[in-house]
Length: 525
Image 1 (cartoon, one colour):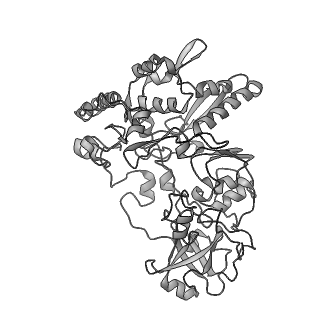
Image 2 (tube, rainbow, N blue to C red):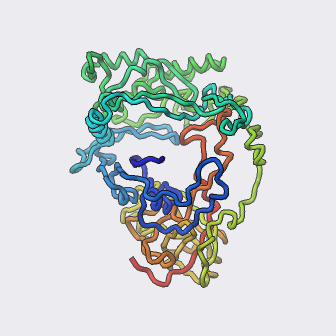
Image 3 (spheres, helix red, strand yellow):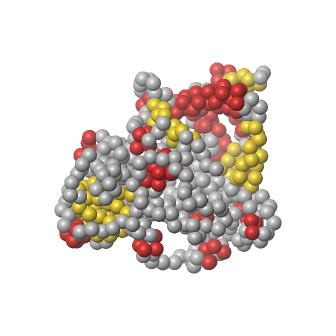
């Protein structure tokens, strides 16, 4: 059982994000690939049925929302042309700085392109129409939900016991994950997409903080120009992009001063500390989309984040905890050096511990790749790019000129000399996971034994064919990587070690990747 439809949105999933890019090509897409690694897990798999032949080409349909033809778009079945920054109404923010940016349409979307909001709105509309034939009645769906941070479940597992092996009774939310029954009416997907539902009246929150906002929901209904009626009931309309953006701004404690004040009141009750002074000066602040277009706007102080922004102060994480003595969101409310979780103790990492990297043979990524001639094994690193942000902005002429028209492989002078490689020579960087062909950038700044390929090349330029993989087209920086799962990062249901998407869980560890590097005899595109 595996997904059959893959929507790619707000990212360049293939090559840029997909550690083990060639395995994605093989197993997700069922297309040409350059991995030669054997399956070696059969002797270790105990809890699920082992299949000697892994499925290939799992995805029946790949849909990509994109404003450019990047690597992911090249491999997609359908590319929905998305409007770019200056063609749409949207919001842009991050937890790495304290500003919220408007994306404003200087021109209408070009040709067939549409904004992200409109694209998903049209998909929702088509889905609802099809559902009248295929899912005419509501469907009950059983959903497995991880135990969440800031819930009672996060203190439910003081020791590791496996219910599937009879070590304890299976109790959802306590000794195992939560199980939730969700009723889905697919004929109503579009109706719900374009209207803001009344569940907002129950309150909002994040990161263990909450606030009531029912009156602000009612305020949205007072604006008669932005009300939508369904079955004789009134709802705030979020049909248009700007309506959706204003709904976010109106109901967020970061852009609505009164809601920030309410959130601090709840935080006061939880902590017994005086905190409302942090929001007193902003109680009357209300931001809307046109305000953001007028001038740059920073977030307001809010207990949702741990930085304090009073009087233009630069954002610094955890000043809220250090200066106002608000407990950290941990088991003890303090910062932890000692981690008393059973999993960390067994791995010998319950205190900050130095551990040398395992030898390359342990990872087994060079079992079938053979060094010939002056080829040498090096540890490869894939830091964030120097001349682009992730994979965006890098394919313009000016940026490509800075980077030799590609993402080169940086080598130390000593290693390059041993391999007979001079600056700007073409080289192959390969292991059992895949291969990347590029130019060598020989630099005194690179330590011996290390090479660097910056994230992230694109398959749309400067990718020649590989000599070591049968003259097939080479890949990129993630072609020679794969994901190594660290068991420590899979512990959960225990205070700060509780799963949350994109915050706590297994990461794509790939800094111990080793490759062979050799000079190319012939470069063929």
